[in-house]
Image: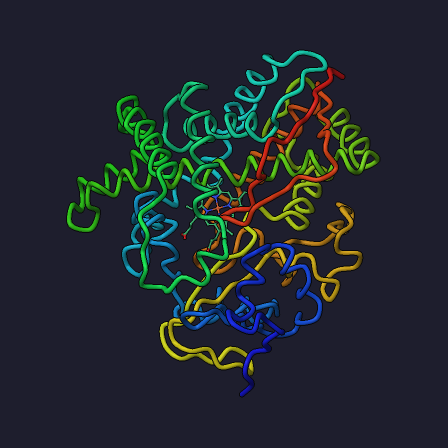
Length: 437
Ligand code: HEM
């Protein structure tokens, strides 16, 4: 068996520190040279990080051998108060029960009825725009996707102010959870109290969650109603305080990734005007008035634009796992408990897997099913793949088509600086101008 590769590092603190100083840039420097293997980033403390760059080994961890791995507890002092034991973070039987209970809220039969809500909220947003107006596109889309997810998954109508609070809190949370040199060299047992801004963000999210509970009417088939029934039927299996964790999980996991996808799509479309023109032609051809479920199949180029955005600028830049016992992964030996990084950011952008990987070219998806491409996993893979992936695609397509039917959106900057937190967030405002078509 082979030991994972180890690129040159800092003589004292290893190479994890190089990664931690600029994670996405660092992954860009190693993604091609080590594309067929595993890389070990040694740190000053603990076992370091094992970066899995071979897509077949990623598949092994997430799909074939998924029961030999778990999600590591990264920064539990920050993550526990945020999403606790919700679907994103729970493990074992507890996770399985939650997933089975919540799955019906995401069935296609239910998604079919979502189109009107998505389109109505989008049109209510664009109705507030004026020709030539400039604003922070990420914040605007964040408010929209929070309100959509609250309506569709939690059955409540959140105000714009509440939705904006959720978006702001997410940026503070992202800053707190971003990969940093201090986080990498710190010994794993040292838990520092959350920074003040982070605690404040959690309090704001809890206030909004309390308003969700106050407004919610039980008895529907939204996530909250499904859980309330499970708590009544099986009180031992579903503790009541899990409700709060699950609402936080849905609000956060359900809105931010979609807002990022749309922000990055508009950014890339601004960089590639010919692609934007072609996309608008498709929307004009397919959509008669407002888009709906019946238009989705014909919005084929729109879907390719979304897939390609998720490849070039994946909102989830990496996933993490750890082996439950000493593991063999391909030819490599990984010690029990060592953190594994499975980086979409590096694998989606490696020239070993893609022609002209940094070129935004939706046509590369022509006649190609994303699920069959091993080097592409924006929603993860295996039993813990994203529960909201179908919803995310439907929602992104409908929002893009609704906006583009009447508006041109141009992101003004040639670069969107980003940080690697749980998601890949912009570090500042994403300035855009909207013009009526
Ligand atoms: C483009 C948008 C989205 C992207 C790129 C995305 C990405 C992902 C990824 C990569 C994972 C796997 C994490 C891991 O295994 O470590 C995941 C899980 C999850 N996602 Fe999404 N997601 C998106 C939209 C959504 C939406 C709309 C929801 C709605 C609630 C959602 C809810 C979740 C939940 C609850 C999990 C945990 C599932 C489990 O462990 O059983 N996501 N997502």
